[in-house]
Amino acid sequence: MTLDAKPLVHVIGLGSMGAILAVDLLRFADCSVVPMFRSKKRLEQFQKDSQSTVGIRKLYLKNSPLIQKKFTLSACPESFTPCAIKNLVVTTKTYQTKESLVPYLPFIDQNTNLILIQNGLGVVEVLKEEVFTDVSKRPQLFQGVISHGCFQDQGFVFNHAGAADLKVSRLPWDEGDMVQTLDDANEDMKNNELIKLFTSKPFAQEFNVKFMTYQELLLGQLYKFLVNACMNSVTAILDCVNGEMVGHCSRVFELIVDESLQVLRLAYKPLFDYEENYSGKDTYPQLKVNSVLNTMDMVKNIENIGCVINGKNSSSMRQDTLYLRDTEIEYINGYIVSLGQRFQVDTKVNKTIQEFVNLRLHLNRRRASMK
Ligand SMILES: NC(=O)C1=CN([C@@H]2O[C@H](COP(=O)(O)OP(=O)(O)OC[C@H]3O[C@@H](n4cnc5c(N)ncnc54)[C@H](OP(=O)(O)O)[C@@H]3O)[C@@H](O)[C@H]2O)C=CC1
Ligand SMILES: CC(C)(CO)C(=O)C(=O)O
Image 1: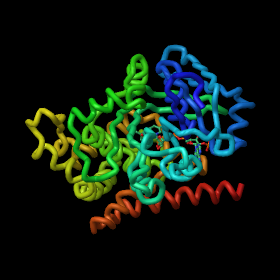
Image 2: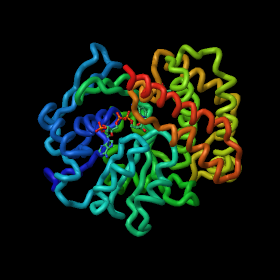
Image 3: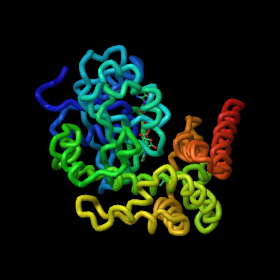
Image 4: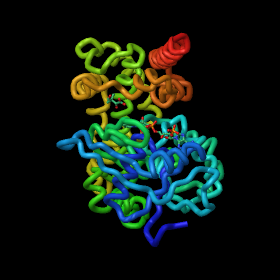
């Protein structure tokens, strides 16, 4: 059911990322937004305790203004009014994706635009192998790589700590379609309802959205992936604030990045061969890949981004272990391990990191249970 003629955007995952996106879509894009909660209990908490209102405190703005938006419609699996879902944003944690989609599968088909706005890699494999197994009914799939920073305050009030950007591209279901032309991207910006919303003004300016080809997004996604593979896991294991490691973490990062790149070069070969195959071809964007995704430069950049620029931050994975929440390690260092098995590459470094993160979470949960 739509509220009016405006496009309808369903959001599964009204957490930090879902909340800042949903509120700014309501503020700056011509659409209606429907948050979808995991249960009747969570839906009632939203509708009753929070009066269906989300608050975003923009910490990076003068006086940290609190912006509030009321959502006329919201749902959970039990209350969802059966209707075809046209535009679906998934902003759950990676490991929550499959479970969050299952109740709505009857309402998702090849006409649905589905965007994943998450860190890490490997969710598309879960969607292919376990969720959308009927190729003819697979939704139009997009990926968002978001660099905004946000953490929950209490209830449905969130602190938007850092404003950066949201990179978006069509996400190929088939690995063979990794390289897209500039015309492919323009086609979606002209004709796809969800992408038209995401690139509409003023929303695109306010949320700093950039739509691009998949190869352009993937370069940024792998860069961010390597940052997270080092910073998130190591700070969780050590239980330290990002900046405490500055000047002393490059050796560990070198081990993680070197092994990860060995695997990523095989799994994403078209990207690493891109300059050789597509430079000078004006129907394709020109990319610098190997001069960016190399161990020594990445280690320096990761230490700067993680330990200096974000030096005062507690990484999201360390926060997950401190709050005894599951982590996304399986979709970060753990994803390198699964790729290593597929490409017969030894990934002992990332496997050890993954197991230490799991051990850290166990230790924190054990200590909490003994208080
Ligand atoms: N926070 C940040 O600054 C950044 C986060 N990211 C990435 O964005 C993604 C989302 O992270 P973030 O927003 O922080 O995560 P949060 O944990 O804040 O939000 C996840 C939300 O998904 C909801 N959810 C979980 N399962 C279901 C379900 N079955 N049905 C409906 N809703 C469900 C949770 O609801 P409930 O409250 O009921 O559990 C929660 O509100 C992650 O991949 C993260 O790594 C990327 C850049 C920055
Ligand atoms: C860059 C970094 C490591 C900042 O803490 C981050 O992305 C996170 O915490 O998830």
